Length: 381
Ligand SMILES: Cc1ncc(C[n+]2csc(CCOP(=O)(O)OP(=O)(O)O)c2C)c(N)n1
Ligand SMILES: [Mg+2]
Image 1 (cartoon, rainbow, N blue to C red):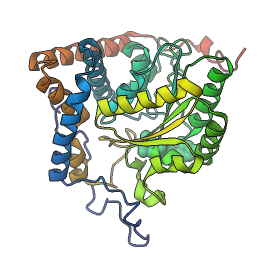
Image 2 (cartoon, rainbow, N blue to C red; image 1 turned 135 degrees about the vertical axis):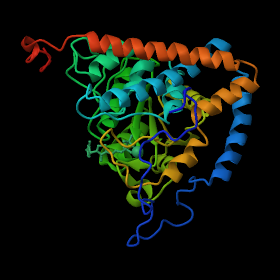
Image 3 (cartoon, rainbow, N blue to C red; image 1 turned 120 degrees about the vertical axis):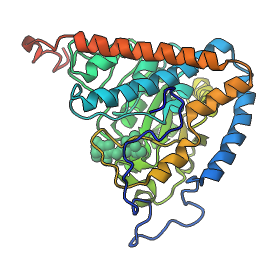
Image 4 (cartoon, rainbow, N blue to C red; image 1 turned 135 degrees about the horizontal axis):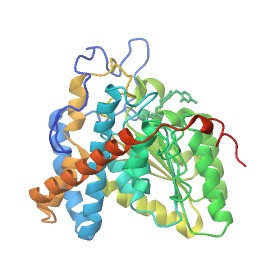
């Protein structure tokens, strides 16, 4: 593993992936050219894109103040180091049950959530640790929840997939694929009904787009002008199934057109691009409630969950995407724009590493819930 969060070494242990683990199956027709997944880059192409992106990042960076840029970078590094630590302690048997990591997708949560204001809401899937921390739930509370400890975010009863804080406007952590799309639409409706100008960010994976609830929700949201921003985190796979094998068209952003909704494709490796697209969506939503569908393309470096043997993709494919690592890309731009130096990056890393260590210590030393807690928090009172 690299020392700094932005290291470009392969993140996953699935080095012995099968050679046939690509998107193609002999029995299925390939999607036509218009709709084919086009962003599986060669390394050279990835590098070219990387340079291009850095230029646009530089322009965007110049518009923001240093404190905010520093906080954005710090949250991305914290998210990555936290998730790496989760993998480590999971393998030691300290975390039980399902555990889905967010490594490679940090720019999506940071770029979008850090554009929100007080009173806005966030919901996401089971891949929720990083979003929970950006919402303001402490690393200690998230780690203790993963350990099933009484001091955890929801008393040790939710585990990895169910972080939640009404006070922080973070409404899960949802284990049912796509379930949060309906809930998020309802929460955004409530924001409008109450006469606020707040918005809801609703994250979900690309596989959730095939669920009926996605379509029902988008239809109602556009019809009733519900201020929900639907953020599809397209990381190319739903468990071990590639998008190309499961979806008839690859351009998810285009699906917004079917509902007359604004839709945008966003590079999920570019935190500033995510921020700017989210700000455009927020502006629409605060003005008259208009919803937006953002398709944010990224890549998950690790397996679907900690129990994924990863036999459906190659190490080469993973490495290709890591050429455009979102943290490395952001750091390079920040350095070129003379906002931060290498020393600053080391300081951010050290601060994040200390926060993660403190979280692990807290979780290690916390007690498990008492037996008397077994039947509490089961039903709403
Ligand atoms: C309704 C439902 N069907 C199936 C599952 C099993 N399942 C868990 S995660 C997952 C894949 C989801 O992939 P995606 O939406 O792309 O999100 P990602 O894991 O890539 O973040 C599936 C099928 C589930 N949890 N809920
Ligand atoms: Mg996915």
